[in-house]
Amino acid sequence: RTVYLNGDYLAEADAKVSIFDRGFIMADGVYEVTSVLDGKILEFKGHLARLARSLKELGIGNPLSDDEWLAIHRKLVELNKIDEGVIYLQVTRGNAGDRDFVYPPEDTPQTVVLFTQAKPGLADNPVAKTGIRVISVPDLRWSRRDIKTVQLLYPSMAKMEAKARGVDDAWLVEDGFVTEGTSNNVYIVKDGTIITRQLSTDILHGITRASLLRYAAEAQMQIVERPFTIEEAQAADEAFFTSASAFVLPVVEIDGVTLADGKVGPVATRLRELYIQESMKSAL
Ligand code: PLP
Image (cartoon, rainbow, N blue to C red; front, side, top):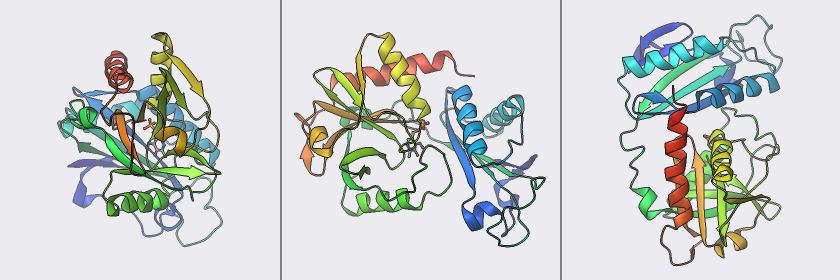
């Protein structure tokens, strides 16, 4: 793979970062994951807007212009011949020269890393026909989940617990209500209404979520933004999740309870088609 590091396109083995990078020592950095379909970049504007917001919330400068970000994304897609896959982007506060809780001077260059991951079958994912199974675990993350930081240890632990228990993912629960999945926003469907938690600092403001809710509203579907419990989800007609790399995928079992007849429902199926079709219209 050819990757991007601080202005250079390098073979991945040659891309090296300091051990004093704040990203490495303090998880002091933010990231984005943007998907590629048919060689085109989806939701680019949304991901760049969220990147800018995450950086601003942490007082990290945005090292590149929108045009420069786009040029790097495009070049990596081209160099790595990505037809279907994702582009990972990370910005950290940079090399602090030593370990220190105090931030380095403001003129310290940020560390910028981008790389691609080929994912053939992203659009034609067989999971869209079968759905996934999830467990619930307590949400033990910090309380600024609206900032897309690289501190992913707890979501990673939750995912490992799901795997150890023979299922695919975990839904995180706080004060009795579902916040989100380990790396996705979650939804239930009851009597045709789509229910998903409202935006706040408790969840990541998913780019896929924002677009999907817009497309669903334009298609006259009913949407309610409010928290729901695991019990309510288990009694729902359907459940699904969204993320840049999954688009829309169904959930058919929660904590060992099968939803409805255990089959993927019409709303999740329709929303997946709608999302892919509509988001491709603005792909770059
Ligand atoms: N929530 C969390 C915790 C995530 O990590 C992600 C994506 O990585 C999402 C939600 C979905 O966000 P998006 O649709 O922008 O990929």
